[in-house]
Length: 127
Image (cartoon, rainbow, N blue to C red; front, side, top):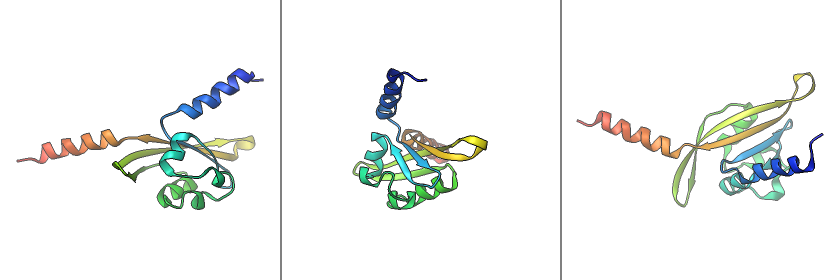
């Protein structure tokens, strides 16, 4: 069995991750998210565990659809400071008999990468 110290370390690690992380159960309900996800997606704690992913992420329908379909891609999130680009990765967690019991969604900020790609594209197409 895991010691209490290891359990607490895992909780703290989840809490301090800079990348937004969401956990969705087999019924497509948002059941957990770290502070980075809460801040980015503006999801209230009261909607965690109580609503379908489409309702919880109604401001982000593309992300909700990706989570439901277990498809990963790039999404753009607008904010006061401009648009940030994220690459989503969805990992399906399986239980007994290889049955899906949850999905873990990580969102990696790829804004710098997108800016560099755009800059390189401009340089290669400049006369």
